[in-house]
Image (tube, rainbow, N blue to C red; front, top):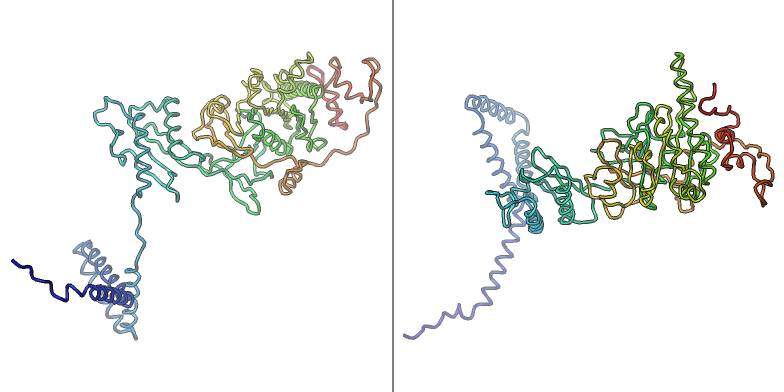
Length: 559
């Protein structure tokens, strides 16, 4: 049967049809643009009608009559008011236009990239949260991840910022090793370079992982709003403590969450040990504590590093001594031990006689040691006592005598600390980069956050006694005499320093002829303090620090 040819209009009119379609599409788009307000109003009227119908259906039958009466009254009032119908029409059209406007659709679930990330994380947790004996495992290869992840949030880069995980009840969440493995896996899979907080709820079998914001590093040294006996070590997360203090952050005044360390006779952790890497900020912490202690106390500084980081404190009011040499450090610490004994004896006698404790006993005395183990090596080579051995009495009885010891050391010298130091320093701080094992060795407990690989100076963790491990950022308190210090930070530290002592007359000097040839003249007070068998190092110390006050009597002397 012969094939009939196509009509001419279909075989040769392809160009005309295509042109006609383009014209029709253009006309439709133009009509849509012209009629867009009308379309919006119509859509709004439809939505208003649907909403009104839902409310009418939800109204109880016994209340519909009153609503009809109220509506009729409104219509009557609108009809009687001049220009009432026109105003009512304009109002309805405006409400319909607002109701029918185009809205950006709200995303109710994760997109493809976020879903792939959640599924990958679910598959990685299967070996840790499942066992072959479980008949209905919550975690299984190829399982439904929505049952295990019941809450999540992402940032603009599709990286997790919060995740809530439900895990089986048989998981050993009470073992630190098992929890550490899960935290390390989540840290690795969720992205490095950030700090994560892990909140374990053992009762509900839930784990909440949250990305923490960086602690502010722009808060400089200043006078903090604290009570007597309180020292601000630094600042932490807002939800970690229940207290805030107003601080100056640049040109603004903000409320920050401080880590407050309480000292005195009622303190449960009267002494502090700070450990860190070189450049971690332990010296900054010691300097910050010294500036706060000088408000109502006396300070003794022993700088074992010998770099002069605490030179700005020398000669200031309330600073009894700043020593960096072995002889001066030994004499200073020996005087501090005798002073502690004297305070204990004087306080005991005052209580027995029914008199108040003298003011000089109530005035706090702070012993600040920065890297004292370096002096311990020099003392061992010279056959002299270790400076840390002289801290036995201030550490054991300092709380009752208003004596506080702050010791800052580096990780490589932890094994040289004496047992007395490690036993009585219940307030601990770790500053600078450190692993979880190093943090646990110092604080006695692992932090609930992942330590970041790079941290600014003064950033670390703190634990007061048996409390939780908190993140810590020490206020910026640099050496004001350092050329690398900014003008704002230098001025902030100088404003907190007390005035210097009035100039003192130079002590008489003599030649050390009995100890060999001497090339320079040494003051008598310095010579007596440096001589190992010299008597009364405490008198020498007080004479140098407070020439106008009576000498402190050694232990056992009559008052």
